[in-house]
Length: 480
Image (cartoon, rainbow, N blue to C red; front, side):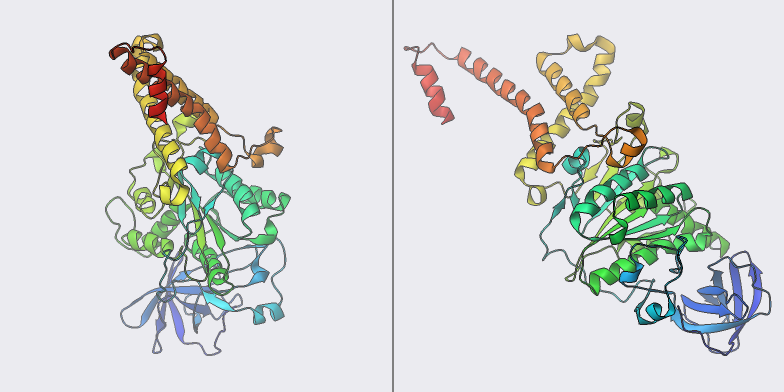
């Protein structure tokens, strides 16, 4: 896919795992330039750094062990590029846009006509959301639509440890959002299990979503160079549809922590000194380089949903914290919630969203979310008291709030559509308006009862009215 010169310009001087050092007499390559070994496989190398004025430190992208010392190396004069266009949709690709779905490579005539785009960060482009009205996308999942709204052109993260349901929740959101939005979808599988890739591919096929989806996989069996590049390849294709075809794009990345891990492994093999916490010294720029490209501009939008694995369930992990700071909404999945049989296992009080504002979701939604959060916070504080003295010792108001919180928790449980074929139980889909009505029905009764109670207390302190009809009429007048 890259044009290769015929004249060798460098010589392989040393090999150490995936790191290959190539010496040049003159005509040094650029950073991130693609080089090709003059062997039968034309092994691709990516220039990682330059040292000693005549040596390029390269990464063996394909992990090709056919490379030998003293092999000739050719410059391409180009960075790592992938073809972009409609022909990429409906297929599964690796980091270099080679098909891994068992189907043949695109024919030479098609590839020749397709534009190419470098996967590394392009020149700075101004991005702005000021001219775009916030458009809320419904996920059909009550707890997400209510507490962490999914807004076009923004970044949402699903945070959780192993086995709490991040991938299944992502599959449900893809199934619910991609089908109704009409947007092009990109999926980047970064360092996850092969089984999950097969399940997602089959789920998209069963729901007729492959026709609008391109998938990129660098799973845990691949070398760290491929895993570190796969997300950038998916973003590159997303940028093409946003900038050149002026379309809205949904991008799903599973898993962002595996991206950090892959970059850390690459840092180790090129002998960089780790930073505090054991991560690579470039961890901050690695995160920023990735996240800053998930943006909207005058042409279109990229709406990103990312999962973030939490090592040892430690939300204070520096890499997890760094990724979270780049997100507009964070959905935290809890092992303690999952152990109670609640699905999706969202820790509502730990989850947060900067998009839950009256300007984005409307005043009614904002007020209901604020009141529901207050009730759930009170529920958490009352659980410890109840464990000691029992629920019967609570005041009437506390007991009422405690019961309402339990109703809210039960209300936000939901069955997934993508699990219907596994469990045999039909999934649920709830519109945002239905969710608001359901929450209002639960917490509205509490407020009505409280208002009525306070009105009764106030009236008992007043002097008796001269006429039995005067007090109600005054109350009616006040209400009016």
